[in-house]
Image (cartoon, rainbow, N blue to C red; front, side, top):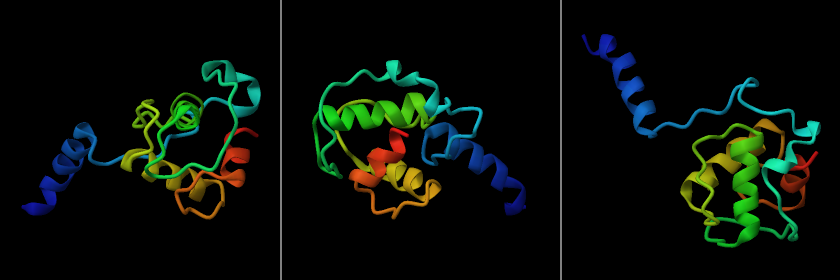
Length: 112
C-alpha cells in the first residue's frame, strides 16, 4: 500500500515547491541566441555566494530563471538556500565544481 502512495506524495511535494527539478531543454532559452535582453544589467560580475545581497545576485537569479528555465528561483537580489541549490545544480550540469559560489567559471557558463 505505501508504494501506491509514492506518486501522490511526489506530486504533492512538487506542487508545494519542496522539490526543485532541473529545467528541461524545452524550458531553457538558447543562451547564445541573444536572449540577454530578458535580464538587462550593466554592473560587474563579482564572486557571489550564499548570504550575498546585491544587483549581481539579482542578475544571476534572472539568468537562471528566465534564460535557463529554473523557475523556482525568485529574483529578489538575495542569495538564499533556493538560489544556492539552483546554482549547485546548474554548475553540476555544466561540469563546473558545484560549490554553490558564482565566480568566473560560473559567470562564464551563465554568459556563453
